[in-house]
Length: 162
Image 1 (cartoon, rainbow, N blue to C red):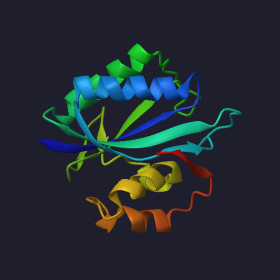
Image 2 (tube, helix red, strand yellow; image 1 turned 180 degrees about the horizontal axis):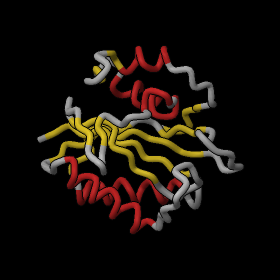
Image 3 (cartoon, rainbow, N blue to C red; image 1 turned 90 degrees about the vertical axis):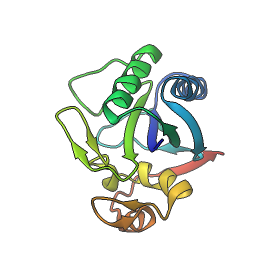
Image 4 (cartoon, rainbow, N blue to C red; image 1 turned 90 degrees about the horizontal axis):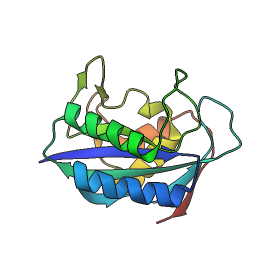
């Protein structure tokens, strides 16, 4: 079984309902959720929006390979109602990012693990540090808590629930 770290994010619709449905669907199609961070309210990163985001990190145990995980997370995003746009940074109902898959380092046209921009984003590092502060980033050989301390992103990230 691989240990998979995912980030949920979204700023539209009934976020509590959407996050709950997404967690249920992930548990059914990818693997058991063995840990989850609190939910954090965060400012949009890379664009302007009046709607604040929710973000949460989940840890799952999965038998799926990374490409199968990606296929399933995209299917879940589509089922929830995500509309993909050319511009990467837009408001959305749900986004599921693959952060880590064990200590795998891989890059294909479709998928890069660890997530290539996670170290620049406080909204990823705060919830990740809550549940995996000592996890070592396999490409940088630094702990998640160290990466958070180094992060220059100063957008607001506030814990809103457990």
